[in-house]
Length: 322
Ligand SMILES: NC(=O)c1ccc[n+]([C@@H]2O[C@H](COP(=O)([O-])OP(=O)(O)OC[C@H]3O[C@@H](n4cnc5c(N)ncnc54)[C@H](OP(=O)(O)O)[C@@H]3O)[C@@H](O)[C@H]2O)c1
Image (cartoon, rainbow, N blue to C red; front, side, top):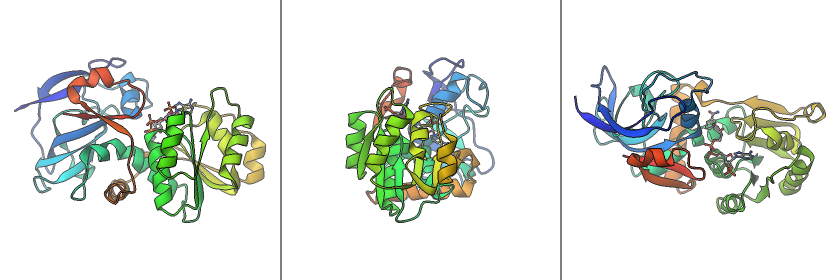
């Protein structure tokens, strides 16, 4: 058995440390992958706190619910660049933040030749969620007017570009910082609306309606809270809001008159409900968009050895490189 460098979480609520552990041998049709990139995502941080709805993780464990690497051995040809998923932090077992992983074949997706491992890792399941939420419960169609909340985050950046390339007629981005709003415009948003500190629903709704310039068909919502309640007021009758996160609040001050007068549809979305085939198809779409130059995301490449220093770093997505 050989040794591999890894991020190790010793106790829930702590920050992972850099260390070493054994690589288990693969069983059945498992794939041995040399890891090139593993992102630190909100889900990884949440699971590590021990306060996620998956419960307290069994420790010690290697965090990381996804990564990108190169196949060493297994049922996929050696040398193939692949994306892979793990259940680290949600179920007992180790994740992607190590130099070598052993993954189940069903959790491995071959990437198109020429894919950038770090960029795909940065987008990963956040982009899968943005795309699948919009095209699944969100019913995205060409010609739709789409409002993307949290447009500075990875879900938001991916959402606005994927809506654009799917033929949205107008894409409106909403975010907190001027830098995020500028980036959203550069990434193709037709309008960028500020979410200001202390905004109430009336104030933010007025700004969003102004920025939207007409009724919205679909809201992509990784925030909930006041932004989601305000965004509902931009919708046309029968318009859809898909919630997939709660960065701004676990509850939202949604008013009945908005919901019933517009007959809005409010959907919830989780990647965990995707079938393996749906996840594979969504990830493949993401990788194809990246390769076509239509999708990117702000990210930072950091050596795995620095995991403890960057674990809680706010701002653009950190991708650990072993
Ligand atoms: N359902 C699923 O399957 C699924 C999949 C992926 C992600 N998610 C969830 O979706 C959310 C976003 O994920 P992500 O990958 O985009 O995370 P991220 O890159 O960390 O982005 C989070 C975004 O939320 C914004 N934000 C935080 N607090 C806010 C507030 N009070 N008001 C307005 N904006 C606020 C941040 O803006 P600042 O930069 O201004 O702080 C940032 O743009 C997370 O909750 C994540 O867990 C769900």
